[in-house]
Length: 243
Image 1 (cartoon, rainbow, N blue to C red):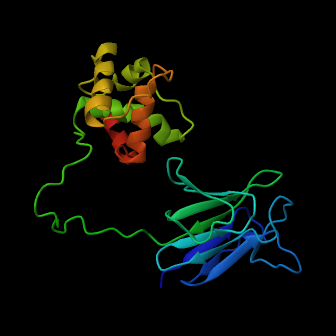
Image 2 (cartoon, rainbow, N blue to C red):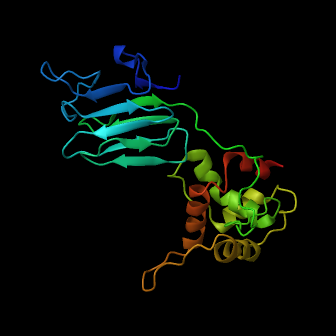
Image 3 (cartoon, rainbow, N blue to C red):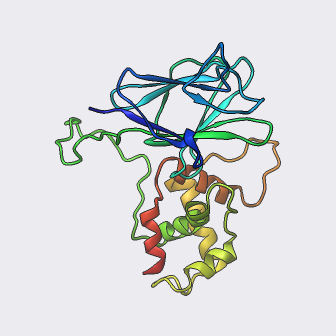
């Protein structure tokens, strides 16, 4: 039967795993004699009854019972993915299979982990119900093309090091692709052309609003943001840079 597993961070008694079957729930917070909770944090900045999670068949819900503090649920295995749970938000669905719930506290965030069932997907080999054939691919990318290698090189630092990594400059892209077959002769103008082609034709990133000062690297930053947001460049594509 599906369900979720909850475990506090660290190695203390609180870190013991708790299993919740569908319909089961768990409360968390600072707790007190009058307000016991299932998962207690000895932190003055955490509400006595901070929140509640509830297991559903194939996912889970979180309720923020605090009156003034927002919580964050992040995907530790993702590329900076997170959802914010505003104060008093009830039964908010969480889309991650593996999550870390962060609660602000005076000494730094306290956290606990939630392991949910694997996500379900339709059979990729099932017949396409769109018999009219009118659906088009929104981002028609050719993974064998040089422009795609440029896009992968742009996204590589954030795929490897997380959302805080800097977007590579044009000279850094040239150096990164120098050993990739077919890319040894790339020039600054060629890389700039591929970046402009990706931005204007393939991914169609919007230009900065009129009157707003735009940095010279807006195209590169916008391409990375869009490509990672829509999963156009993934970890497995990094192998293309080491062929």
